[in-house]
Amino acid sequence: MPLRSLLLLCFLTPACGGPDRSPLSVTIEYPDGGPPLNKHFSFVVDLQGQAGELVDVDADMPSHGHGINTDPVIERIGNERYRIDGMLLHMPGAWELYFDLKGSDNKTRRIVVPLELAHQ
Amino acid sequence: MTEAHWGRIASIIGISAVVAWGSANAPLGSQEPEAFVRLDDRERAIALTLSPLPKMPPQPSNRFADNPEAARLGQRIFYDVRLSRDSNRSCASCHSPGLGWSDGLELSQGIAKLNRNSPSLLHAGYQRWLFWDGRADSLWSQIQWPLEHPNEMGFARADLVRLIASDAQLRTEYEAIFGPLPEGAHNPERFRPGGRPPLPAPINPFRRAPSLEQLAESDAGHAAWLAMNEQDRIEASRVLANTGKAIEAFERKLVPGPSRFDRYIEGLRENDVDKMSALNTSEQRGLKIFVGKGQCVNCHFSPLLSGGEFHNIGLAVEEGKPFDAGRPDGINTVQIDPMNGRGAFSDAQEWASNVKLRYLRYDEHTYGAYKAPTLRNAAVSAPYMHNGRFETLEEVVRFYVELPGGPPIGHREETLLPVDLDDAEIRDLAAFLKSLQGEPVPEALRRPLDPSRN
Image (tube, chains in turn blue, brown):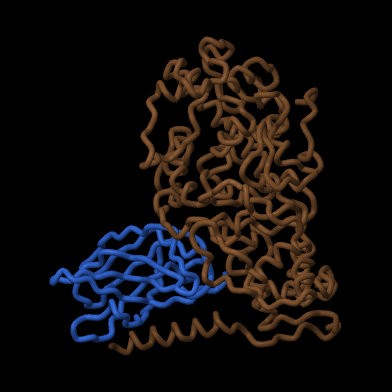
């Protein structure tokens, strides 16, 4: 399936960021057309040199006080690349995607990627 | 960071800008009457593409979903009162064509009073989940609930086998589609009167599960079921599933024609003021609120005017009404339902055809949440909400304006805040909702088939 590569910066949150507090980023390859509204989809995440293993993917709508209704599944498909299945962004609006990376020190860092999902 | 990366970022910013702002203020046309309410940007991205309704999605777990013979059999069964314990009610009793394919009651009435409002069947084939709590993942599998719940139709799958076997027309039509009925289908010693399993229910960790024998003592239908041999139980369940598939084929045809709103949107796209005149000024003002400050499109989006997922809107429960957890019970139930899309009677059991089950998450935030219904044809399916709380669309709108009270469980979605609408705007919004009524489904579907005609 052809994929479109997008690079998204993350926000630093209190639970996010390495010891040097450097900005974190990942590359997200969405299906053609971008993330769909209210349809299950898969995408690829490239850690772009971030140290650690991707252990959890989640999403929230902070202004709504709720998250997603699915449990996405992570599959490692390359050195720093992961395929995520089962994502469902079921409403239009402001989402945050969460990528939890577990480092060799056993600590988990969270990369937060904002995503504004428009009506389609 | 490489130049390529910055290029990608720039692309994202560009895409976001287009998505967020659209194209600016395109003219409506040289003959724009002042009566038209402007929505811009480019008529609010053509009213956020709430129209037209797409064609019916495929239904892989039912290979008869679009089979005309199955739909005809489904229609025959849909109106057949023999499928109830008291031979007095059919599917149409709670889903009456003359009452918006609902029943006009606050809480539905089966053999006994039920706990929830009867949802309209119009557009049911588009739904991802069925029931207010989404405890079924297909129209065919949901049949077990109304058919076998003792408070609804109180029937049983073993009785269904014998009924079809004893009616020459039903039997002929059934066997032409699904193949032979099971051996001994006439025999009440094989397919015992009242024989049915308990309805799927998640295990309650706080209550000791009764033994099969205890269940059988308190439930004669279950006792009859346990007295049947295992193969006959499987066959009876297959007949029930096939009957559900025929009913689903019928229900997928319950799609009204285009509404005045659809014609207006067509006109908006084409700059055709004649088509846009399909909505009067009040309805257009209502649409502007719907896609604007009313924020209705947060949950009622897409051409179905519903995302089909679940929301806690903070609807208080009136005194004396039963407690209802909402979506969590639906999640737990659909996952263990032997008739779900992964079950033995599904025509597409592989995970690829059941992504909604595979990735379904149980989450406490869904307590008190119910499915956002489609708003198409809502005008004819009063009363409204899962508990039939409101009699008119004006009352529904006023609820969202004021947001009184709070939910009995869970918490109201935080994006729901009181909306500043005056009485005139409330009337406009309700008027818009009434413009979503499509042309009625064909008359031939609105009544039982003539039994003398094949």
